[in-house]
Length: 443
Image (tube, rainbow, N blue to C red; front, top):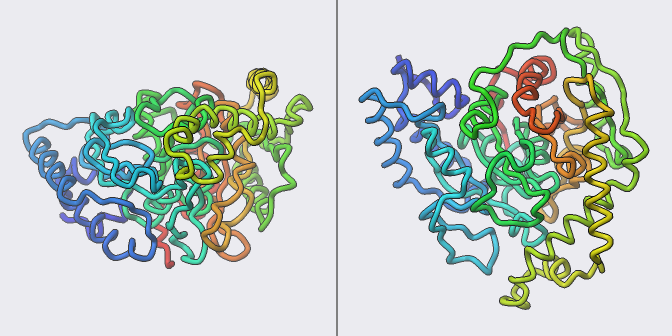
């Protein structure tokens, strides 16, 4: 038996087909490369594709499987990496003119984990410069080429949505993993802060930056989580009727637009109709000002990250990043201390406030993807959960008023990523109208 179009398979489906002898890693990689060749001239997700190196690795992995050796749950699965994540021997430009000739010497920690699980790093994906505030990516939304794919993990979200690879990696400082997932109609996971090594990924804000990943099912998100050592391989089956979900609009709900509230309400109603308990429960008053707290921390820690580049590259550093490195916001030590204290209090307050719930349901983004490529959207409805160090899973939730994808976020509890994956797997079958199907973007 052969697989008609391997590029349409999820990672789990492809892995099962390879285990059954119906597919090889070479077949899967060839299908992904063909899809990239056909679509990426328009989508522009990739900055570098290592065709030859990936094919050598695919042949090696096929030979190992034939010899009875399987490295792990991602054996033979091609993956894409955001260009701020180092892959040994590949360019690592960070989409910056300051690093056009840079080639990484070592794998980032997350890449090493994926190699150990049998994954094939295929190439580097477009990003906002330094995954921060500089030069914009050229990636377009695969569902409508006139719109953004989101940022800063633009290429990572688009590559999975457009069936170039089953899994890709990004980073999140505010909403850089979750926003592209909502805009492009993919699943995504931002794990608990610090549970996956950030070694080898460009730093922006040390207490916010988190490695995350994209896939086309919750099961595939779990494969990566298991390979990263933060979840079990199978999980626990949950009945929808057992779920207790808190619906939270957040203090920034006034920023929602383009039917975002309608999509979120539809998801809540679908869960309720399926038997889940969904209760509206907003954050306590102590969260007032939390958006400013997050911005203070991001800019204060960002100054430390970009000051060396300012001093060595001067005017070559993008104006937006120079402002951060020069501390144009005037953030002093006392402001940073107060912001970190507020964040620490908010993390404990969240745990207490939502005790007894399985997850919090909230907006995936402020709305549909923005038109044009001059911006990458607003992270305000994602950044709160990043500041709180919480695990988050993005789930497609249908289309917005103009037909572009929109998603929701399921937010869990620190260091309980495994349980959130269980909840998301059950909830996704109710929330995602494309669940179990292949959505092929039309461009």
